[in-house]
Length: 209
Image 1 (tube, helix red, strand yellow):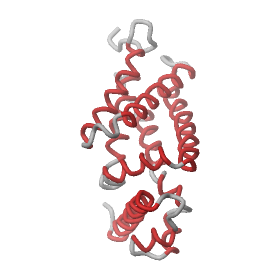
Image 2: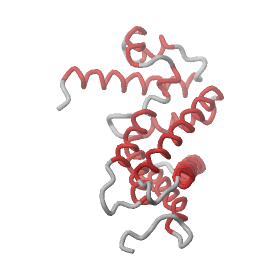
Image 3: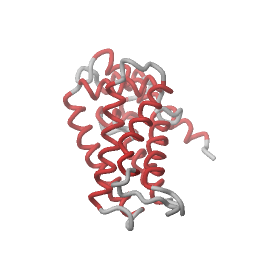
Image 4: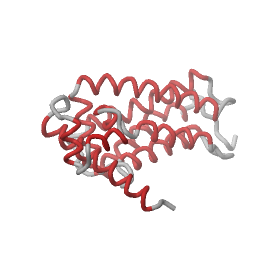
């Protein structure tokens, strides 16, 4: 059970994230200062540094957590679980976490995506985070299914899934206004990308066969 102090810390962290994303959207990423973010969240600049090392860390605040969630799903593989089933579950959990009350609002998630698309400094950081995440996820997938997937198979499956979800969500960012619509877009993209694993020439075997 989360204590009062921990809940207060979570609220402060959430306030800093939302304030930063709002200011980045209104003023620009480079133009916004740490002092302005802290003031908007009603805390001191010193308090800001208790939570984040800098502005980029605010934008990518949940990268490690999302990777932990994904690798935990793979590490918890149960008899009967399939490669595609677990990968789709990872997308489900990741999309839900991205806009969960504990993490950030749906509008905050939309603001962050727009910022990453528009800011060169954030684009560079996003590529590094994405590459590192996919490598670690591919390794975890291979370890979860060592008899079914080679390291190449695992890397290809992860790359196809992550790439498909990201491109589909970005391509439909303006079209789809609701959280549910964006969730369905991401899930559908993952299923399309992973369909090759289920095909006659794919690597996934029928558990019953």
